[in-house]
Length: 300
Image (cartoon, rainbow, N blue to C red; front, side, top):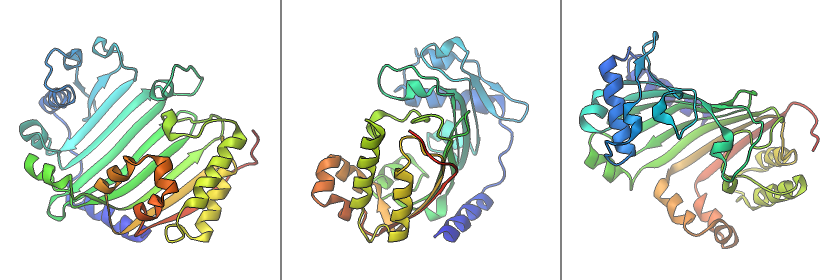
């Protein structure tokens, strides 16, 4: 699967020429359309008035210090795209997009009124589409902290046609996840360094977190994860809440994992899904490979 995904990503990169320089018109127009989409056409939104510039490297950029971002915290957002006119003129995704947002505050990203010393984060991604094949390739999406913690992934989605708004609407019901490679490198210096919402992270004492993780791993269907990968996941869970090392995952779907299926099971609630055998149905046809490489001994 890893070889197949690598080939698909390579083919996607060759389908589209290298990113060209963005013009000032490209930048200002794409910024305006993006904000109007995000704010349901509200032209009074102050972010529309942000100063947009073109960097010497040909990227569009806005700075978080701009008064237009009084309620947001970040250092800089940069982006570039291929065939940005698709987005500006027709409201459909460009053929390729690359963006980077630096200086994100993990405390703001995590639910609750908290204040920690966790270092800022940088979110970046490169996405391409192959229109004729109905594929969208996430070449790499990455969330990295200034302390060196990184979570990243590469993914392939199929049956996703973005040539028009009507085709996009039709595709919502058919889009499937095909394959992905994921990696997480953790220094162990900070608990939850990425500021994930509390609902997505394990809470409680270190022992309680490890117990909860062990229970989840034990419930994963045999057809989804083999004994070797289950042991790797268990090794990772044994070092919670501050694992130190690298976790690599390969998640493959034999027939394509429908995203509508995810929504259906999400409505059940996690406890109901696990206790009523929903995991077996949800993960049918999928396989997970895992490799955990610890760097040092773990202390609570």
